Length: 307
Figure 1 (spheres, rainbow, N blue to C red):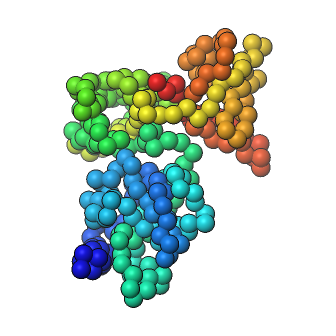
Figure 2: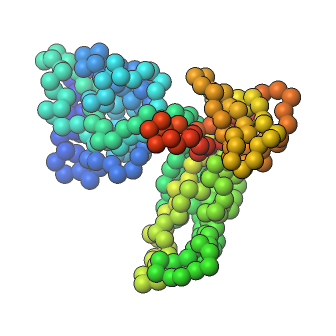
């Protein structure tokens, strides 16, 4: 009886949202984790480690906050794989084919409208926050967009000597600590971010952009930040060597990951860890891989020293 009731509720959720719910398709990208497989459909079961409450509000509360991704085949993804995804509720003809008459819809079926494998960590995530809005991250911390301290970015349609910058104020708090305010600038280094209260935070963007022909209501402003929990973030690489003969055109730092050895020339590495080392230094990195077709060399996107 309980299984029948669960199946009925899930079917009603899917049908109702398919017909008239604005949450039927997301435009925002979410971090998802493959936590298992649906054996009947040979598909992946997903959880959203940083957005379980928000996705439940969008899709309906599924058993254990777990969803059946009907177009992600289990043979293509390992358990633990992280994905950046956009999704909608699956339509009935997209999941009924793999269910028998005796099947139960234990997990709400969803369809990925976009997905890419993520080589980072679920404890390092990107979120968008509106002005005067707060969001929960990592299940226990709250980040709030408090204020725009200044905005002297060169407006669209204007001729400026420099691009300018904006400064925003955010706050972060956890169950075990008081709220702490921090100011971030749009021209801060996006690779290393800013450390505060055991978090690393990077301001990626503030929009809308100033426009000479249009005044924007403050309530429309939104920031996109990347935030990492330094207590939970695990190192995924080691800086093993520095070439003292490095110049602006040569690769100075050797970084080893689990699968490959990489060479980087970004000065921010030396500014963060120094230029001498007695032993390898554990770090967390995200990077754009080498492109053999274009000849583009790998470059750093994130460089963090975990606690």
